[in-house]
Image 1 (spheres, rainbow, N blue to C red):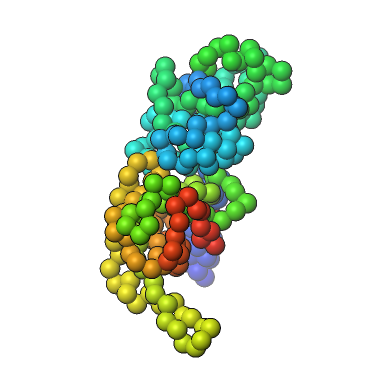
Image 2: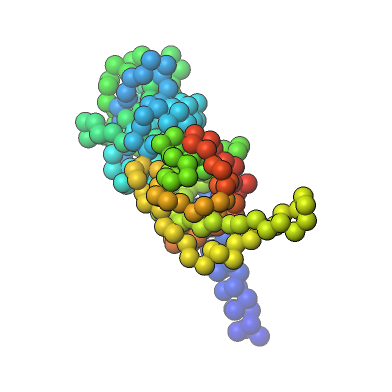
Length: 270
């Protein structure tokens, strides 16, 4: 009887640990890391539309323009799209909450990890203290990675430099949670006509997935991509998926895709 009770409590303890682990992965990095931050100017205080992540206009306006260039956290583009809470450490000038930013660019400053947009830097300050904080130029900060949250699904934008049908470059946008996309592969799907107005798409020819190249930042490209509609699968690390898990999305890119258009995947990370 005693052994049964002991095993029962061991099971409960194990389940509790798993629940706490899942919660920690959902809510982000618990401890803060010390660093420094500065800012860059722009005419409208938003982000840089030509940032190194390749987001274009999305990188300028996402998160209401509260975005950042990073150095070490860029990680050869893997860090693009990640979200961070950043708090400065001047008690008289800095708010408790700080600012929450999306990584959209690469940049190096004076031993800084963050080069913030004007909107993001201003949000570090207490009310009516932004001008004084800007006067510092560079401030000591602490930061932690947090989940990104969006009201829309994950989308794949066909990059403006794509040339139908011979060259396809895609950029994942509105990527929620705490996940890094480390690889992307494509295969085509085909339609079979059953009746006059009824079609069925099948993926039997997806026996061999073709890997895309990380061109730069968050941009993945492929010369001579699959003809027809495209299934996409991507490998993720971090969060509840762990490391190396593949996520597959059927018919993510239509057969007659167009440069500059973002396609809704009907999927989002939890």
